[in-house]
Structures are given as C-alpha cells and as structure tokens.
Length: 261
Image 1: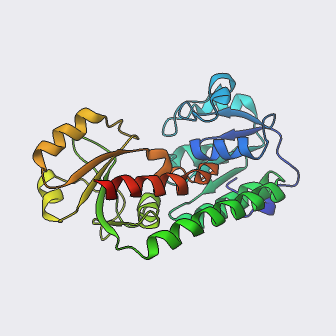
Image 2 (image 1 turned 90 degrees about the horizontal axis):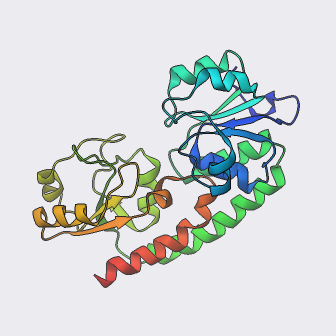
C-alpha cells in the first residue's frame, strides 16, 4: 500500500528499495547501509553504493519483477520523479512511501519523514538543523542584494526551462536569482527569442538532466550576446536530500562568479 503516514510501519524496515537518487544519498547519510538493498541506475551518490548495490532500472522505468523478487519491506518513491502507474503497481504488494518536494520546506519534511520511517529520527533532525543553519547564512547574505533576473535550462532540442512551482525555482530564489519564468508551471519549452524577450541577465545551463557543456554555452552565447550564460551543477539546484548540505556554499560561490562577470 501507499503509506498514508510514517507511523503505518509496525517495525523498522530492513529491506529498503529507493527509486530516487537524492533520497538514496539521504539513506546513506542516515547510516542505512545494510537496510538499503536496491537503488536506481541514476543513484550515483555515494559512489560505493552505485558500484555495489543492486540496481532496479531507471527512475521512470523501474524493473517491477526484479523489485518483487527482492521482497522489500519499504519502497521510497517520489511523485514527480517516478511513474504513477509503476508506483501504484508496487504498492499492491509492498509498503510505498511517496514524497512530494516542491520547495525547501517540503525537503525538510521529506528528511523528517524518512528519518521517522527508518527509525533515524535523531539523525534526520540533526541534519535538518545543520541545513537550516547553513541556508540561513545564505538568505541573509542575498536579502540585501537585488535578485538577478535569470532563467535555468534543463533540456535542449527543444530548450526547456523551469516554472515557479518547481523545487529548482525555489532554490534559484534562495540563491538570489529571480526566475523570469516563475509565472509558468512545471517545465515549459522555451525558445531563444523568448529568452531574449524576457530581459533576463543570466541563463544557467544545468548539468542534468541534459548534460550541458561549454560548447552549448558558446552556441547559445552567439545567439544571446547581451546575456551572461553559465554552466551550473544541477545537483545543487535539484537534489533535495543530504546534498542540501553543500548547496549554500555553492550558491555563495556562484553568486560571486556572476557578480565578477
């Protein structure tokens, strides 16, 4: 079944399958080495898990039969990253916890919930406190500066950006960037002409899901000569587990790079 609350598990799970990369990394941070038995092919952190843990397909194409054979006592999924039909199929046989993370407050709740499910409440509470402390410093630093009008591209051919109801947009705002497409929903397609028309000062090209490289910066720079274009680490904007520990420092460094021109 899809668990309605964290107290629905009668005992600590000892056979966990994670369908979400950022939540896999969180399980590792919480010390659930033995309990986590399988992950996706996109769960690249930590590297030792990526190399050694059983893999059950991709986030959008999980191997249902393989997961059934593993007999998990908890599957951790995400509303956006996983396919609803696949999650519901797994929920017919196993307890499934589905997270829904659209902003940093949701991320804190997700960390708390997974801590409660796995009986790692103290560890998850401490993690939340540390992340909040680090982000507080960033927010204070950027609150005195005018937000930089920016767009964030996640895909090419066609170009796709992010709307205001996404976690990435919330991270942009936290990093002192004003998402010029925040009036749109989810992940709309966008043209070069639209990027030019919205009068943004900055276009960020993410390292994921599309692996933008310097050649893409150069290509787009020719079409948008008056706009600064930069590559950014997509994990820092879109991973909502323990990787949030590193995002505040990254945002500070990114802001310095932007201001330096």
